[in-house]
Image (cartoon, rainbow, N blue to C red):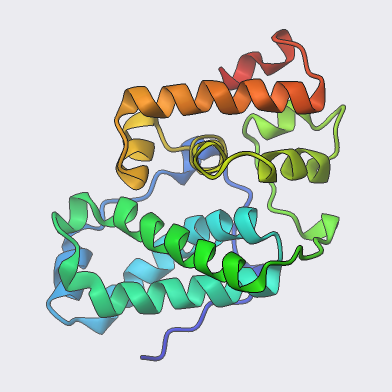
Amino acid sequence: MGIKVIEHTEVQATATPAARKLPDISGLVEKAAAGDLDAFGEIYAVCLNPIYRYVLYHVRDMMTAEDVTEDVFIKAWKAIESCKGRGQTFMPWLYRIAHNHTINVLKKTQKNVSLETETLVETDGPEKQVAARFSRETLLDAIGCLPPDQKQVIILKFIEGLDNRETGEVMKKKEGSVRVLQMRALARLRQQLGKTESEYAGWL
C-alpha cells in the first residue's frame, strides 16, 4: 500500500500532553477494518505524530524513526482486523506494534545512533522543568539507561501524556504496576541526575 511517512519537518511535535488527546477515530477504525484504505489514511494523519514521537524517543535518530514509523503503519494496516475492540483499543494496540517493532530494530542494530540536539522533539511537559539545569540530551541519555519497562512508562506518561489506565493498556499491566514502575523510574532518574525531590515535584 502507498503509505509513506511525511517529512519530519512537517511533524507537529510541540504540542503539550494535554493537547495531544486524539479525536475519536472509532468510526474510521471500523471502516478501515472493513478494507477502507481512505479511512486508514485519515487514521494515519491523526496518529502519525504521537507514534513518530514515541519511536523517536526510543531510537533517537530521525531517519530511523521515520522508517520504523512507516513500518508500524504498514503492519497496522495489514493486521487491523485483528485489533479487538477496534476503536476503543486501537491506540494502545498501535503503540504496542510501535514498541515491539522498535525493540526489534534496536536489537538488530545494536549500536548507538547520534542525535542532533536541534532536531530533538520539543515538549512543554515535565521534561522542560529540568531543562534549565540539564541539557535535553543528558535527560534523554538518563531515560535511555532505564530498564525497558521503566523507560516505556516515562515516555508514555510524560512524553505522550497518557494516564495510568492508558499506559497500562499499552503495556498490558495493571494501573498499580504502572505506578510502581513510574516511582522506580523517577527514583532512578533522580539518582542519575542528582536532582532533589522538590525539583521532581511535577513528575510525581
